[in-house]
Image 1: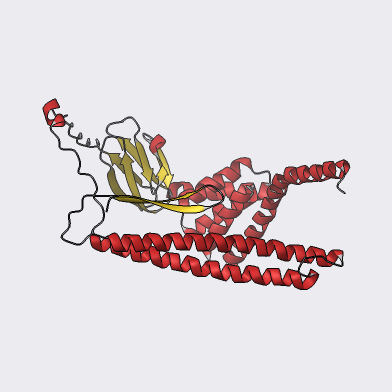
Image 2: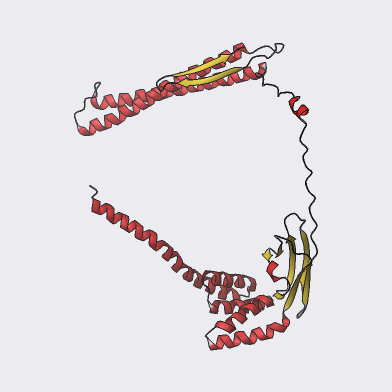
Length: 336
């Protein structure tokens, strides 16, 4: 028996488990970051610089640490991403409390600064909703200032509502150079032509849409054949369900006799299961056979009453199943 105290205990345990789940997830991140950091160091020893930098960046994302940022900056330096390396090492030089690491980061950042490639963004006409991206990163707020970028190719895209996109590509090369990114005035999109409403005379003189006609003779015969075939399948399934119902009833009688009077509680329980299964399958068999007979009858009617090709298709027909919860019927109305 489940007592009230047991219910309360289970509820308290479930609540504690839900409350501790975020804590477990948060505590797992530093462990994952440490494993990723070790993987990055191993990749670096193997000479896989790009993979090592990606691993250091992932570790820093999981658990930001100045030591990880320091290694990431040095890795980017080896990869030739001078701007990324300079930004990371400068951050370490400003915030790190490790004297040796802080000094080395500051020295290397000073060496990288004159080697930086910079970009300057100029916008000819500022528009409402204007967004400028560089390889997908939003740089709109950098307009009017110089900012460091890593050597490489960048696709610049400018977008504004109601205007055509402007796209250009820049290539950042040359230590100490500045690349100009100039966004010209965006061309306006043409306005959509106004829709002129029809005069009242034209609206009232429109012809009504033609009513749907009954399906052609060939279509009705095909539907009749398919419906009758489906009815046959339902009848066969109903007969099969009846066979299974009879088998269950025989099994119950074998346990407890024709009157299902059992000598033991175990036999009675087993016999009751068999009787319930027999009753369920019997009801299913009755329903399937009734549905199959109705469908087969409808299919025959559709096939027999299908008009010939030369007859005018003037009438529509409708088939609708009906039930009151205890019996099933199919209603067929219309003119054929």
